[in-house]
Amino acid sequence: MTRRSLLGRTAGHAAEYLEGLVSGPVAPTASLGELRAALGRGLPEVGMTAEDVIDELVRDVDGGLLGSAGGRFFGWVIGGGVPAALAADWLTATWDQNAALYACGPAEAVIEEITGAWLKELLGLPAEASFAFTTGAQMAHVTALAAARHRLLADRGWDVERRGLFQAPPPRVLCGGEQHASIDRAVRMLGLGTDSLTAVGTGADSRIDLEALERELQIDAPTVVCLQAGEINTGAFDPFVEACEMAHRYGAWVHVDGAFGLWARVSPRYSTLLDGVELADSWTTDGHKWLNVPFDSGFAFVRDAAAHRAAMTTSASYLITGGAARDQIDWTPEWSRRGRAVPVYAAIRELGRDGIRAMIERCCDHARDLVRGLGALPGVEVLVEPAINQGLVRFLAADGDHDRRTDEVIARIQAGGEAWFGGTTWKGVRAMRVSVVNWQTSSSDVARAVAAVASLCSDG
Image (cartoon, rainbow, N blue to C red; front, side):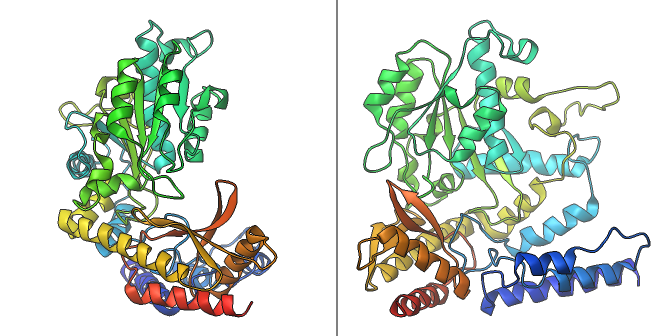
């Protein structure tokens, strides 16, 4: 079989999978044992034809794939892949460029340069900000907070890239206390340790407590304030104008976790939720969430480009620098990497600003309809109606053990396969998260999900 026919055969398998997402079960149907039995052959001593490898791979993973790329997945904040982004991602693998340097892949370096500028314009971020394409918000946090660490310590006469953190002025990281766990992990990776985190508290609306924040800012130390654009359970947005102005009065760096919520900036309907976000010093968001490009795709933006570059750049005698071109290695924590900007470039060109706006607003409408539809069912309580695309409900038990009942119903929904929701603990109670972030989700998907939950609840 020729390479062309192999790729055509593989495209057929891919198309069949995508078509199956419309009507097939969202939950995996194969058990751990079945998957290990199907895939767990001994190490091959003799090879086989490429077409047999692909055909058997498709056969053996059957039943072991979560339908998170489809329109009936409402669990974690996982988007799908708009067609141009998916196709461009295939081309990225085909071209197989090392997107570390302009010299390694000139076209991909220029695509990244252009796409970074587009993203800043879409998200309303300062034109002078630098940017990085990462695996996701986790490494985007690491990148942005490394820049913060550099600037805050340099301002106190400490070169952290040369001297490390031992005996450095200890930085503090102030959060509301409902931050995503990737922030905690980022401070561990950067050597700050989770003891550097201080939760100042939030109000009933999950927004950071400004009075408590100011008390903590009065402590003389290199300080980062982490704000949220879209809290993971409720979609809440911190008060950016007040928090940024306050933090800057005390010389603190403000970092915004906007993994999905920063995209609301594109919609005039929701952009006021982000008023003042441009006053921060760094921002992160994901492409594999609301922009709907394939995994993995994250973005970091840093107002202080010099601090960003100082924290990330490296050199070696064998590297060929780009001169007037932008070398990606100066801005990311990776050396060898794929051209992550290519599918992002394709998605933006396919959708345009108006298409991204419409997708965001459509998801928010579906999230609201889904939460309201669930809330109208007997024995369902709405805890949080969506401000954007995130909501919370729980299931009530006759004996008062609502946590147990909620977890039981979630498990039954997942096993049923008609839709997929995940659980969480919010303000001390178990809840079912409702997240709508897929470009394919339709009104019929919402109705189908509500009907499935209604059927399960009526069964007791």
